[in-house]
Amino acid sequence: QVQLVESGGGLVQAGESLTLSCAASGSGFNFNTMAWYRRSPGNERELVAAITNVGRTNYADYVKGRFTISRDNAKKTVYLQMSSLKPEDTAVYYCAQIRFTGDTYWGQGTQVTVSS
Image 1 (cartoon, rainbow, N blue to C red):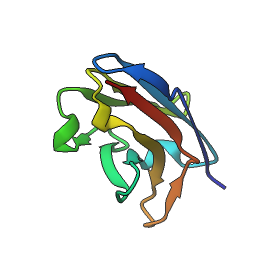
Image 2 (image 1 turned 120 degrees about the vertical axis):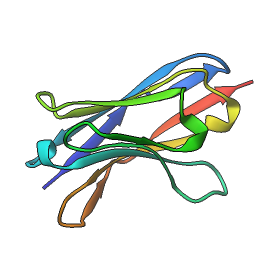
Image 3 (image 1 turned 90 degrees about the vertical axis):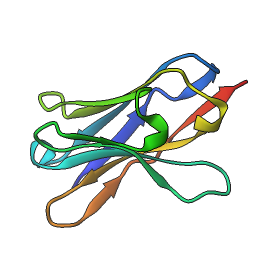
């Protein structure tokens, strides 16, 4: 069974940086795509960034140049480095593991609040 635990959320001011971590347990981490999603109040959950098992990355346009996704397969951990944060980045951020079988596992989410 896959479990994903996010950490690193918090309250920051606009322009500051924050790094989220997602620790995975269970098998198959090295073989699957990992991703960060977010959901802000009144909005649907949206993809922020993803990284494949071989390190290929994909970003939403609104975070390109500001956020960086990375993974440490030895630690079974995926990171999201966020810089130049804006109030509109305020959301609950979710870690996801997208398996080659088509199944997706989700973490419980971590709140990021950016004050202006």
